[in-house]
Every structure is written in structure tokens, then in C-alpha cells.
Length: 306
Length: 304
Image (tube, rainbow over all chains, first blue to last red; front, side, top):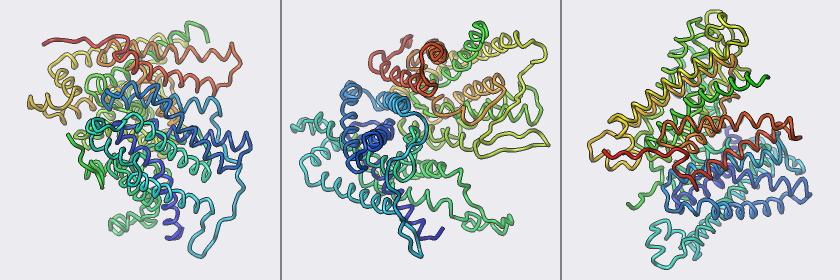
């Protein structure tokens, strides 16, 4: 695979991860817990889009939009029914509860749609082939949507009342409430935005590969890793973390560690020392451990008050 | 399958998961360490013991000890980089670590000294059962149940005495927040590492028992689903109470295994049934966290 091709693949992966990490990090920031159901919500969106697209025959774009909106609303309902009753509980209690929500969501999806791999009904488009790389129109869309989502989120955070209120709640929830910010309604918006973005990310992954009830679990480690790397609660950090991870996952398999470490001559490794493809999921885990060892607050981590 | 056979099978599963549940209870219920990768210990214990007994042709008891040792070391190693961190990081690191263990056994296979093929996606079969030749096919499960119950008893006695000791008081204070334990001059890091090592030992023991009972293991059996079952056991049974952890294992295992027969009575597909079963497990965890925070058997509040 050519060097430029790996870069393209990395950017596509980073865009998908960014859409998911962004939501995880703002929920953590505003609600104060690590939401283990985050990627499972994305899977709910993926399957709702499948239903709209395949069973009802809608185009993929309206299907994706309606599914993501619906998933955001489902998240608000689950927050009202479950998480709202635990606002005063510690982060660990809510985190364990979110694990229960995750199991219930994933298996509801599996009970309704079955365990086998599915696909959206989308016409296959010819990839654009250049001497240096090939890219499908879908991959271009993934990058565009990822960038647009980040830009929209930046605008939201800095140029809207809601964004200012979100930042205020993030800095100091009590002060924000005392200043007359309706924390609960901010939380409702946060869930909607976070899970809506996650759903879009999930649908894009589903379009690029295939759809499985298990896909939420398959991406939970990279998504958490990107979030932690960027500093939990920092949306820009999450984007940066997604970028680093996208590159690490794709370049990791093509680096000859024998050459990099200079041990090729010593051990007479003629074929080079590469990470076997089966271990690709392990890359994000190793990075996670390294980040936690070196910079537990993440690259752009901020100091929380108290 | 006769009803007696099924009940013995169920009791063995309850004993094995009881050990897993006790181990998680020590980590989460007493120390507040949210281990979302309990299945990693289970898997490592099963594979280590299998390798020792099947490949190196050593006796069952050495396999058992080897499996426990491997999981202890794993718990220890996993705890080192994470011991200083907040508990939320703990959850994702352990979850990922358990997946790495599974990916390792999915990708690797080995043959030692001309022994049988061990590992890979196909799993390992023909794992010898201890003292199998002394019993008939009908009486053997009863004997194995004895072994499993003995192990459960040992796990209970050890973990119970640990949680009642001064060590147990320190880990409970760590659970309630680092400040008190720190003010008492305790090295929180060391306590967390020790808890993970001890929890690993018993998680590994459960894995050994599982492997030698079924005679076949594969990476498919060690999916995160197992971790979630054990979590439901601890939360429903009562965190911070060892009897509660065992009760939780009994209830969840009884529910999990008896619903299998539902498909004989109502027309439902295997996948759908398995999924609905896990939906109930998930909802149980959420409901217990909402309405029954202490679980069925509450933690004893002791005034020192």
C-alpha cells in the first residue's frame, strides 16, 4: 500500500472516530461520567437507518438524518428514565449503570435485527483512482462530514447561547446553576447532540464496511482512547486524539519495527518485524496505556476545579 | 438431558461463576475498582491450565496453580500503570486488556514437544478431566461438583478473611475516596495492585475449573458477555457482601440457564432468545442500580 493511501485511510478513520469521540467527551464533561453505552447508542442509529433505508426504501441521506434524530431522542428518554435519577451519584455508579444500558441496547438491536452482517442499499460507486491512491466518493463524504461536524461544533460552542451555557456548566456546574442557567435543559441538548453525532459516525462506518450488532463494542476502545488522549471533557482534544489514533491504527501495521528499533541485523529478521494484522485492535489499547502512563490528563487535558 | 444431570451442571456453573463473582466483588464491591475485563482472568486461567495439563502433561493440580499464577501476574501487571488513576480509566483499561488476551489466543497457537495443537480460532479440545478414569459417565459430574464447591469454599474463606482483616478495612476506605486512606499513611497504589492480583488469582481459578469441566475451550467463550454476567451477579446479589456475591451468581446462573428451555415451549429463534436473555441482564443491572443500590444482601456496616 502506498504512503499516500495510508494517509487517506487514516484521515477517513479519524473522521469517523472524531464524530464518536466528540459526543463521548461532552457527555463526560457535562454529566461527569464515562458513558459505556455511547457506542451502543450509535449502533441503535445504525440499525434505525437500516430499517428506514432497506425496509422502508428511503434514500440513505434522509434515512441517516431521521435515524440520527430519533436516536438522539431515544438518548434523551433514557436519560430521563435512568441517568436523571442518578445526578447526585458518583461517576462510578453512573458508569456501571451505563454498562447495563449498553448491554440492554446492544441485545435489543440483536433481538430485532439478528446477529448476521447487513448492508445499506446504496449503489456501489466507482472509486477515484490516481497513481498515488484510490478513494471512494463515500470516503470523501466521510471526511467532509467529519470536518463539517467539527466546524459546526466549534461554532455551537463559541457563538451560540447554548454553547456558552455548556461551557459554563462544564467549568463550574454550581456557579452555572446559580447564574440562572437551566442545567437540566442543557443536559437534554448535550445528549441530543452527542448521540446524534455518534449515530452519524456509526452510520458512516456501517456504510464503509458492514453492519453488525457487535460493531459498537468493536469501536469502544478506539473511541475511548481518542477521548482520553485528547483529555476527557475537551472536544478539541477528542478531535486531535481521533486524528492521532486514525494514523496510528493505519500506520502501525506498515511500520517495520525491526528497522525502526535497529534490531534487524542483530536477530537476522529478514522479512522485517511487523505487527500482525490480527493484532490491529491491540494498537489502540497499547496507545491508551502509553498515554495513561505519560500524560493521564491527555495531550490537551485541562485541570478540573477541585 | 435428564433433570438430575441438568441440575448438577447448573450447580457446577453456579460454583464456577460464584468464584468469579467473589473475585469481582473484592475488586469492585470492596475496593471500588470497576473491572470491566473480568473475563480476561477467566480466559487466561483456562488457557494456562489447559496448556500445562495438555501440552506439558503435568497433573491437574499444577494446571490449576499455574492458571491462578498467570492470572495473578496479569492482574498485577495491569494494575501497575493504572493504580494511580481515577477509577473510570480503570474500567476502559481492564475492558481493553481482556480483549487483548482474547485476541492473543485467537491469533496464536503452539505445539510443544510434539504435543497436540493448542489454540487459534478453532479452540482446544480434549482437555483431560481430573481423575476421570475413577468414575462412570454418570457419577463423574457429581465428583466434579465436589471439586468446584471445594474451590468455591476456599475462595469464600480466603476473600472473607481478607475483607475482614485490617487490609479489608483499608480497601473499603479507599473505595469511599482516597483521602482517608491517604491521611492514615496508606499507600493506595499498593493496595489496589494487591487487590487486582488477588482478584486475578481467583478469576484464574474459575477459568481452570471451566476448562477442565467442558474439555474444550475457544476464544469464542471468553467474550465480554461473561464479564457483564458477573457484573449482574455482584450488583444484584449485593456489592460489598461475599454471601451476596454468591447468591447473585446462583440467581443469575439459574435465570440464564433455565431460559434456554423456553424455545421448546414457544417458537423463538436461538439468537433472539439469547439476545432477549441479555436484555434482561442489562435491565436487571440498571434496575438494581436505580432501585436496589445495595443489592439483595446488604453490606454489613461495622463500627470499629
